Length: 159
Image (tube, rainbow, N blue to C red; front, side, top):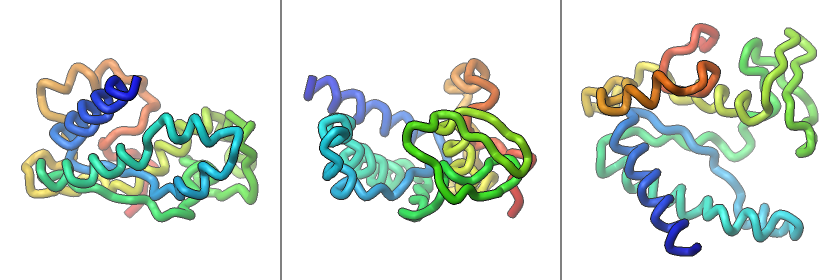
């Protein structure tokens, strides 16, 4: 399992850094998160720290831009449509519901859209990709769910 996890992280971080101009990750307090005993094993098994370490040096190798969302950026609590921020969002609430505009969608998808907005669509890292996916990866983009976060400019993101 350990080798399979290492291989998956290596392949995933390489693919992301080679094919995407801007990558956004959250600056998570992993040390603090593993103190939550019911979740500690799952968090450790996910190897988030190793993923972040590899994506950091690989984006430098391949000329991509890595953006770390600030530790306390409310990606899950902010409405990706209107920008309203909820005061509280419990971990067991899997659907985000905005009381301001009525948006309802998966909590993780809402957070991903908010994080993609931090990627400043259209930013070029100097690689010539200008936020676009390389042609051989275009198949993955066209088969992705339309609501998935991407490097495309979203209509509701303002500069």
